Amino acid sequence: MVFGLFSKQVDPICGMKVSKDSQHKSEYNGKTYYFCALNCKQTFDKNPEKYAK
Image (cartoon, rainbow, N blue to C red; front, side, top):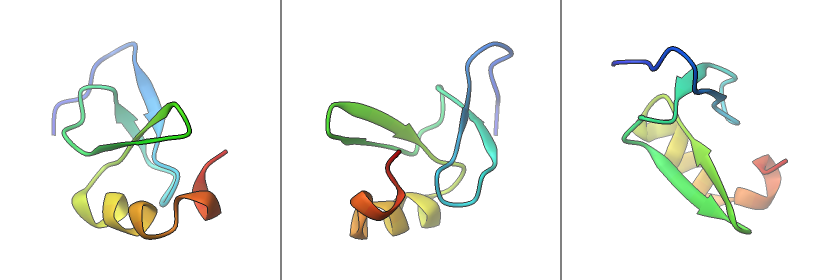
């Protein structure tokens, strides 16, 4: 994975810092959430209201 230097986001599932360049992302309630891996994205997509902040 390639991480940008200035655009770190936190994966809401595992807490890992990820870049906005991540290929794994989802939109929920007008906000974009970024994930370190497909598994975290899929977990979020099954129940986004549980993990959205």
